[in-house]
Amino acid sequence: MNFETENLEFKLQVTDDIYKEVIAFANTDGGTIYIGIDDNGNAVGIDNVDETYTRITNGIRDAIQPDVTMFIRYTLQDNKVVKITVGEGSSKPYYLKSKGLKPSGVYVRQGASSAQASPEQIRQMIKDSDGDNFEDARSLEQELTFDSAQAAFRRYGVEFSPEKYRALGITQNGIFTNLALLLSDQCMHTTKIAVFKDEFCTEFRDSKEFGGSILKQFEDSVNYLALCNKTTSTIKGVVRIDKQDYPEEAIREALLNALVHRDYSFSGSIIINVNESKMEFISLGGLLPGLSPEDIRIGVSQPRNKKLAEVFHRLRLIESYGTGIRRIFKLYENFPVQPSIEVTANAFKIVLPNMNSNNAEETVKATLAVTPQMQTVLDFIEKNGQITDSEVQKLLDVKSTRTYTLMKEMEKDGLITIVGRGKGKKYVKKISDTPTSLYRQSIRYEQCHPHNL
View (tube, rainbow, N blue to C red):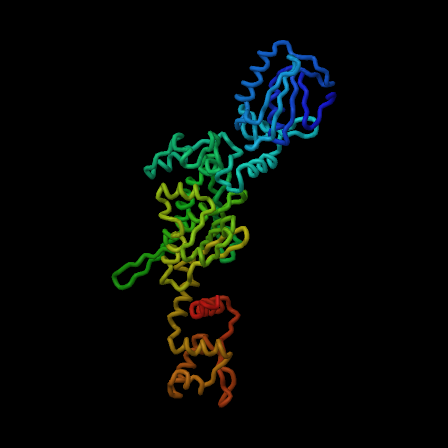
C-alpha cells in the first residue's frame, strides 16, 4: 500500500476534495479512500478521529446526490486512519449537490486520479441507470423554470404546482426528469415552420422557429399556421361560401401528433413545410416496433412519450390515444386527395393536401368526369393493355354508335389514346409527360385500385 491506483486514493487530511473522490469511485468501479495516509503511502494519522469521522459521514450524506451512503462502509485502522470503502453505485451519475448534474459536478475515475465527466459520459450513465425511456430519465439540466407551463395549465383550468410534479412525472426522488425539461422554459428542442413559394419547397417565403416549453411551442405554432391557412370565397347565387385551405382541426391534430410522439432523444427540430399545395409535418422517430402506417390510420396507438401524452390529455388538448390521425382522415373523407403518411426508420411525416389548390381542383374535375362506363373501360385497359371497339361493345353491352361517342369523349378528356385506323384501331391508356396529367392519373388509379397500394 505505497502508491495510488485507479481503485485506491490517499488523503493526508479531510478536505472538500474527498467528495469528488467518493463520486468518482461510485460512478466507476468502486474503490478505497484512506484518510491519514500521505501520497507515499505512509500512515501519518489524523489528530481528532471522532471529529474527522463525523465530518466525513455527514459531509458525504449532505454533499452528494443521489444518496450514495448505502454503498459506503467506514472502518478505523490503528485508531488513526479512516478507511472509506466505496462500492459502485446503482443510480449513476452521482454528483456534487452544489454543482448539479453537469460536468462540473460529476466525476469519474481515470487512472489514479478523478476527473470531470464529459456530457457524453453523463448521458450514458443516465441511460444505463434509468433505461431508454427518455421522458423518465433524469434531466441533465436541473435549473428549470415553468412559467409557460403554469400559464398553459392555468388557461386550461388545471392545477400545476410543485406538489403535483411527482404525479405528473416531472420529478423522481426530487430530481427533474426529461419530461420536466420538455415542459420547462429551458427546453432546447424547437419547432421550425417554413413557408415556400414553390411546390418543391426550395424558395422561402417566410420561416419561424419556436422554442421554450412544448406547450408554448404548440400554441405559437397553431397561431402561426392559422395565418398560413388562407380562406377562399366563392359566390353561388346570393350565397357566399368561404372555404379554408386546410381544416383547422386537421392542422391541430397533425401538430399534436408531431409534438407528442416525436423521439426527443434526437436533438433535431420538428419541421413543418407549407406551400400552395400541401402542409407537411415531419417529426423525428419512426413508428415503434410492431406498428405500421395502416395501424396508425385505423387508430392503433402506442405513445412513445406516455407521460407527455397524459399531460396533453389532462389539458384536454387530445381526447384519447389513437384518435388524432383517424380524425384527420375523417375530415378529408369527401375530398378526392387524401392525406398521406410516410415513415422511415427515424422519421414520421404526415401530409395535408390544400383543399383550395389548383392541383386539388383539377383532381376533382378529373374524378367527376370519369363516368362508370369510362371507368369500366379504363379498368379493362389497365388489365389488358388495350381495348378495341368490339370489346367495348361487348364489355358495356352497347351499340357501335355509343361506342364511338364514348371513346371520342374519353380521348378528348385525355384518358385514352387512339392507335391505328379501321379494323386495326385500338385504344390504350393516355400517357402524358405533363406533371398535372400524371398526377391526375395517379390519383384516379389509387382511388380505383386501393388494394394494389
